[in-house]
Length: 87
Image (cartoon, rainbow, N blue to C red; front, top):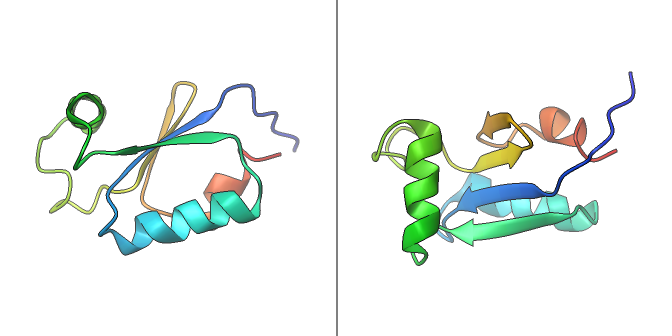
């Protein structure tokens, strides 16, 4: 199976989230094309993350990081799943 990444990944995270930091380190190691939004500092990014997740209680529901690839939304850090979009 070959997956082609057509769009840049959008990553919604906070600096205090261990899974977020693991994801960002992994993306940097893979030299992935992504843009990261700190939802603690960027009000508009937080609003977008809340809309995507369907709740404003993102942190306590363990939704972070939120990764958007095109119309696909991934929650948390699943290395194998993320790697499908990095080819």
